[in-house]
Length: 102
Image (tube, rainbow, N blue to C red):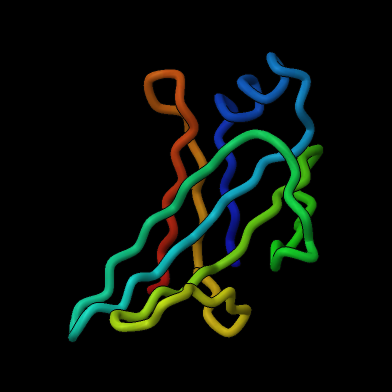
């Protein structure tokens, strides 16, 4: 996975004295459609909850991929599907994540 963390993200994390960043990726399978969501927030997450840790420069990135299938009662954390690219940026003072699987 290619990981790109914008300098603005690093500044925002430094302002709150945080050395870790977490990203929750979700793929929703509904009929023949697949939608994706990516949420980024400051702080570390528990690897026991399915988060993978990657060292990116001076930051620890915690990320996990959840799968939600229509008709299923619960989501599933998967390491079988990994995005090719993960980009985290700041937009209007907020963290923003985008994943690409192509």
